[in-house]
Amino acid sequence: MVLFPFALWHFALSGHPWHLLALYIDTVSSDFARRIELIASTRAATQLMEEMMNDYCRLVKKHSLARYSAPVRKALACIDADLAGDLSLSALAAMQNISSGYLSTLFKKEVGQTLTDYVNSRRVEQAAGMLRSGTLQVQTVAQYCGIPDVNYFTKTFKKFLSLIHI
Image (cartoon, rainbow, N blue to C red; front, side, top):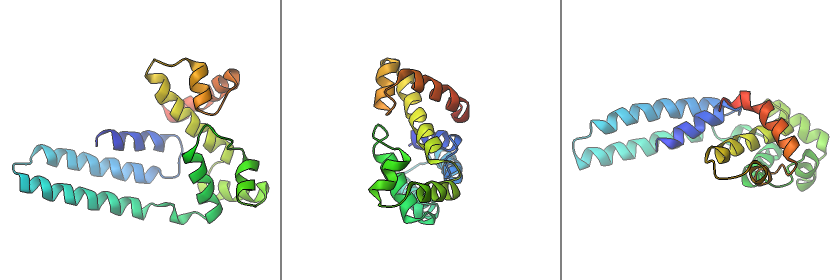
């Protein structure tokens, strides 16, 4: 439970448009953490757990993808589903039978950054987590994150590194 708000906070720092959700969840989580330490009975624990689930669901519902158009929602779903896949603007547009220009404009308008920057920031965020483990080589991490060219991966990683504050 403690890792969930931290992951969302990290996600928010990458410039993702859901930054407010992450901040709200972090605030709610901190409050619940304090309250968990004060629990004196099983009944109180059950009540708090129910309250936590309700609050988290309410926040997620309030800040859901509903504000995005269908093409942007589909693009975001594809990106989240397979960061190692072909996430080029042309591929994501072709999957939806729309023009690259239309998806590009819509994505930038609704998400607040270009599709390419969004994909790269997500890939770098994933890479940072993998590199922290210290068990994988940079080349392996680059491939897992969808950037098989290690030089391009390194350049991209350095560019977005300051944005996600690793």
